[in-house]
Length: 157
Image 1 (cartoon, rainbow, N blue to C red):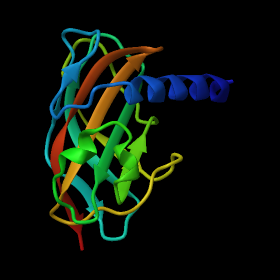
Image 2: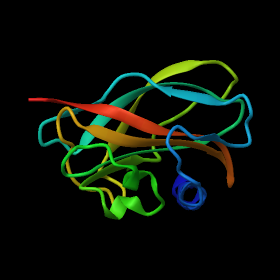
Image 3: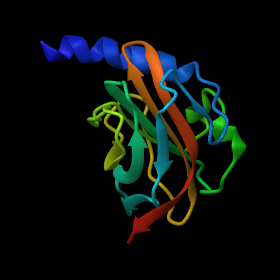
């Protein structure tokens, strides 16, 4: 049954992502051709608990994506959010392991959804602030792509 497969994969992805050194714009992973570029703002609605981010990416291998966005209550960019465990500092932290990805060596432009469904997720994002994004692709327990950096938040009112 798919549920039994998703839980170990999700836990493995969380363990791999938590172990990453999270420097801004860091690009790491075993897939040397893999790349990701954030295209635009994290789009939300006022009071929403979900939003979208457009990403252009390519990877040769990978079957699970973890995407995360964190923001301070002030909405200001702060290097503290780039550190491991910084979701505790964040007023808003949205994430997802549920977005499908295609790793076939070609570039893809995809809009990914982040939300508060997964445990630990919380809060709402400040309009016209900055959010720290982590985009990690894994194949089993192998991290194949890791990209992180800052994007603007755009909340429709």
